[in-house]
Length: 166
Image (cartoon, rainbow, N blue to C red):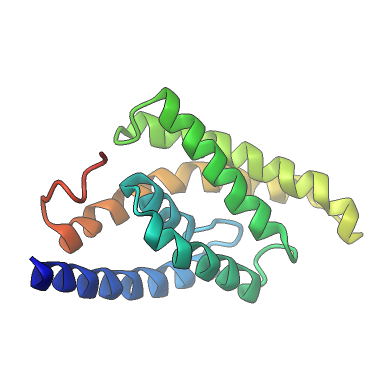
């Protein structure tokens, strides 16, 4: 049993390495879309809170380091995503594509509101049309990336009950 757990932990580490590099690359390719968020959502969906302890700070550090958002906004972004996720989990079945779509639409609107409301703090010019386009892209692409990452995540745990939501 311990050997199987170690094998699972190694697969988990390999999966995260293989997930992070394309996610960072895609994020640079498609500005304004957070591809790293799919990893956080999978961690929440799997209820692997021990992984959340290191995944969340890693994603925040990556976001802040890439400079894709204003300084400090990624912490608010991921907090809002987690709150929306837990609220949605309470109301809907997290495994369905409809949930992923509704969650992504709400998160796109939340991202728009966060940037819109915090932009005066940074004294930066806000291009509302660009922000709206990025929010719509985030809302449309997140369900696809989330589900695709979830399918690859099955390699880590197979069809074990450990992977499926408890």
